[in-house]
Length: 520
Image 1 (cartoon, rainbow, N blue to C red):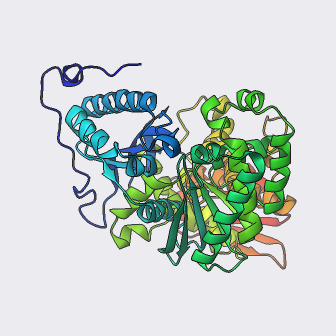
Image 2: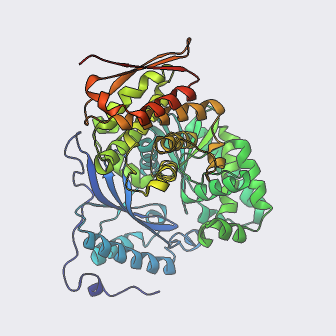
Image 3: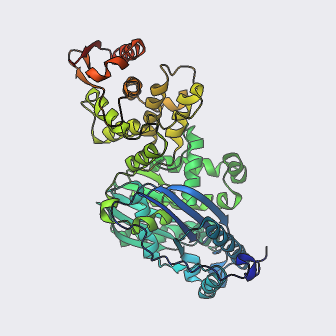
């Protein structure tokens, strides 16, 4: 592949001059964004356009080219020549796409390969001349900090250790109380490890020695949560899902244990990785790094002894957004912000989700703060799929909830949300294609999701307006007594179908139901 001449990109026009320092958010009330990020890594070059709710952005555009810029760097000290050509072609394409999209804000960073290569400065200068993109070549500790901030975008106020693996380096960073603490970088990137001389024993010794130094540098107690950032980790997680027969293949917030990592390492070593990659849709370039990456992860777990492991699809690119958020925006719940944005955009009666939340919450007196936010999310999303064909709305809701780009929600919570929204549009769950998914829930959680969904189904029949409550529930768990008091102005809405939905709700709760009406 050869690079296109300079004039091909902008047809004689001067390339735009994008600055990564432009303010992205005018104030803490910012609601939406439309911004591009270019990440020139040691293995891949990626262009992402974020759009939607500022606190929980969606991927308007996402393209990755595997360039392997860092391949051979240990031997030559220079960027991989073929990779450099591929990267330049990719960046020319990305700049042209950004120009066509009318993007005014572009952020661009380069990491380990470009910062370590002797021809890195020359490459950066060529990129700016050819595309107008000004690559910010960041040091290792800054790469660690931005990756950790990406994790915080998805999990506000998380505690633990963030590990970001790339082609030429691996970074560690502490996070606690919404802040990034100590951070270090290391040469444990996949491409660089493939170039270690001396065979498997020398590689094992090298990994062990570097990991021991990292442990001393981080001075980290054991028993924390480990957050994994990077394509190689995500590939390993996808293989772990295959080994376990996990029914939900969304990688973000997938959980593993150190024992699972060891089992998956053995599974990888027992299989032909090329065939495994093809079966799971993992690119050949990525799967080639998996055997050495899983060895690193296994050693990381042995040395740092995390209590559990969470996979993050958010990393350095999302961390660059988080960097520019004011504190008030950072404090918002990413899940609820995304749901509010979707309600404003797609619901027939935006604002009614808040009314529904007040309406159904008395049915869940023992819900903790984590469950209450999932209940609120269900209320906000209860009507956003109304455009789907009526015969498929229930299924569409499950697909949307379990596969949507959402932060701050675990796999089991996605399934709970999906099941609740299924009951919003359907009175039964039998005979669907989601039995394996619903099997991730305990019987108690499945029953609770059904109660929530049936309450939403009833509440949706009593629309009075975006801010008008149709009535209220009184629930006495000890007596199994459920009373619905319907406001006088909502009485004409409470016909036989609404009564049947109330009876179904009471039955799901194992309760005796009673309906009362307020006076005019």
